[in-house]
Every structure is written in C-alpha cells, then in structure tokens.
Length: 146
Image (cartoon, rainbow, N blue to C red; front, side, top):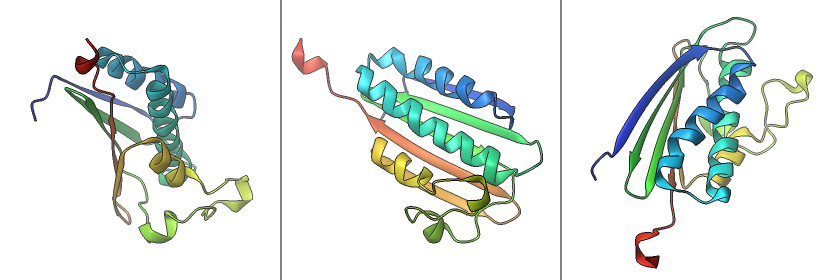
C-alpha cells in the first residue's frame, strides 16, 4: 500500500503537550477527509497514548516522546514512542482497570480506550528502554459515494 504522506514530531513529556499532540495528529489526518467521529476517535487514542508515556513511561522525569504518522488511501497509522521505563508485563497492562498508579486515581483504561477507538493496536515495550504503541484507523471509503 502506497504512503500518501508522512510526518514525524518530537516533544518533551510534559502534560501541556498532550493536547498539542492530539491536535497535530488530527490536523494531519484531516487530509483524508475523515468524519468528525473518526477524528474524535484518533484524538482520544493519541491523548491516551501520550498521557501513558508522560505518567507511566517517564514518571517524575522529563523525556522525549516521538510521534510518527503515515497516511494511506483510507487509513492512518500512528506510532507513539517513549524512551522511559517500559512495561514489564504488557498483557497485565492491557487488562481493563489495571493501573500501576492507583494513588493517582488512574482508571487503568488507557489501552482499552485505545483499542476501542482504533482498528488495531500493537504494543512493544522493553523494561528500561521504553514503549512504542502503533495504532491504525481505517476511514470510510468515500470514493464509492461519488
């Protein structure tokens, strides 16, 4: 499948950048003319992934978060990476309501939310090296409606 466009973004893991990240990715995705619902899904998933990197990946330190995104004919692929502490047990972390930060009133629904709003979610993580989350969202094919 041919890539129509690609972007890369890097920023510090400070909470103020979560809204920045979601707007940038949504603006990039807008090139494919998604529905408002599809855009809202992308924004929500990006917010969850970036927030996870800030709160869990870097904890009380500042690090770098990198987002790369590729546009295809009817699909966006988004990868969000951090170089923080990583996830020791990915399957446990994917369980609804499980959180490593209960003292922060975390809901433990980050991965569940990402999975429900995107069409695919892949997590790769290595303790001490960081985490990469790759998500895709398929868009309604508008060419058949013309």
